[in-house]
Image (tube, rainbow, N blue to C red; front, side, top):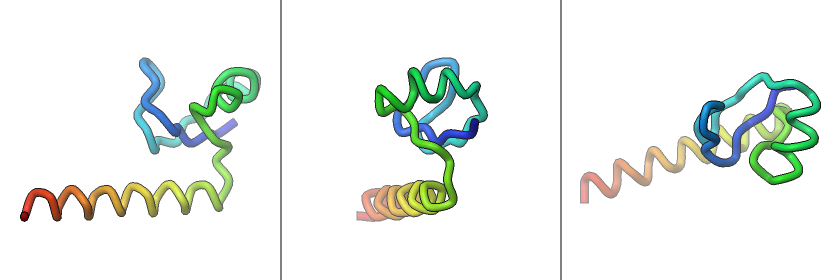
Length: 64
């Protein structure tokens, strides 16, 4: 099952990353603890927008 990581998880990945994990691990651990969300097309678009906005914000902080 593909999931989008909502938080940094040691030995798995960083926030915003898309990972392929076992179904049980995704449903019983990651999703229950709000560490990840299923990688649907809607969730992927939302994660990409969030990363884009963070990048723009960091550039603005660097300039000003």
